[in-house]
Amino acid sequence: MEGGWNKGGKGPSICDVLTGGAHGVPREITHQVEPGKYYPNHEAIDFHGRYKEDIKLFAEMGFKCFRTSIAWTRIFPLGDEAQPNEEGLKFYDDMFDELLKYNIEPVITLSHFEMPLHLVQQYGGWTNRKVVDFFVRFAEVVFERYKHKVKYWMTFNEINNQRNWRAPLFGYCCSGVVYTEHENPEETMYQVLHHQFVASALAVKAARRINPEMQVGCMLAMVALYPFSCKPEDVMFAQESMRERYVFTDVQLRGYYPTYVLNEWERRGFNIRMEEGDEQILREGTCDYLGFSYYMTNAVKAEGGSGDAISGFEGSVPNPHVKASDWGWQIDPVGLRYALCELYERYQKPLFIVENGFGAYDKVEEDGSINDDYRIDYLRAHVEEMIKAVTYDGRRADGLHPVGLHRLRLLHHRPVQQALRLYLRQQAR
Image (cartoon, rainbow, N blue to C red; front, side, top):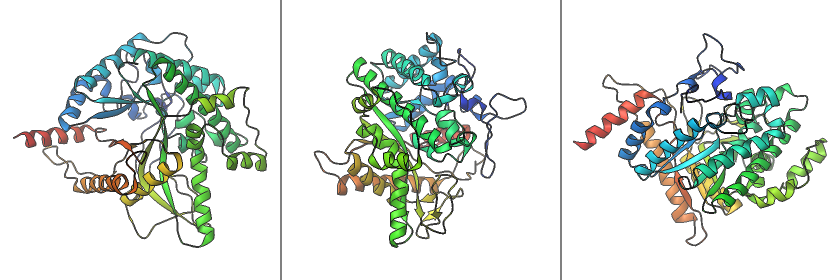
């Protein structure tokens, strides 16, 4: 979203070498910027150049918080420097000041699919333990700089996406690693995860040392799974498939590896290298809350299903009881309530819905407006289910407490911005 990919001393990140894609047109990892190819992240919506007018628009819409990320390469252009880029730090100072001017709370992700490209090319991405130190240095610098401006942080965006290691894009975005290029992709994935878990825990510990009022969360791409039938094999398959995703939050919220993962490593002969003191770091650096994205649910069956390219779940089958978007994402507001209850009962931590939204083939009218009642209906239904999760399923003292809900990609396109401005002008009359 930010754009300004080569401005203000910023270095190239992994998302700067991802080409554009569309429904049925996959994105390409080029490893360097190639002439003639389209890289949408280079300009994006130019938030870097137009953040003041965008934030003013957020305020007019009544936003109370705004989730974005700090581009690692705007602070450390290569990722392994000893000193940060002051121009990059100043940009976020100004942006946070602008948000606070309108009483909008910043919610900041440290790593959102944009690690430094240099760390991938020179160190092998998160396969290398040295990257832990580089990430922690980055986290400490921004924690110290913005300790009085930002309270809510998250370490890694949708860290569990790389569980779909067969799809190069997921692993590359999460960790700079294309797992299929490794001899044992799943073992490599778990090694990468251990490095990221340690880095996350060290970042949490640093935040508490710098400002105990800071809240640092982890972030999960939550696709709740339903067994396709009440056949015991389908029910067990759904549970096992969800456990493959829960390991990402089990470790970050509980502070240790669950037995089911350790048993899998032993059963499959995986050798995950850990250093002395790692277990203590994980115990002491548990996250304060769980942020998650929610777009859809999947149904799965033990036999006869197919892999889902979006979620990465094996055994996926169409759910005949819910509709689907143009992209095949199943529209399931009740699934959000189900997910909220499942996550709170598992962790008893505050929950933050940090992504939710609906993709469609929007028609931009001549006046720049978009008549997207379907999107309004989608959002309304999801908010209603969130309210039910709190009022019916939660408890007053220690119950389910969603911190908030963010609508993702609301301003990813200039026509949408223009439509919003038109709507606000009409409402003001």
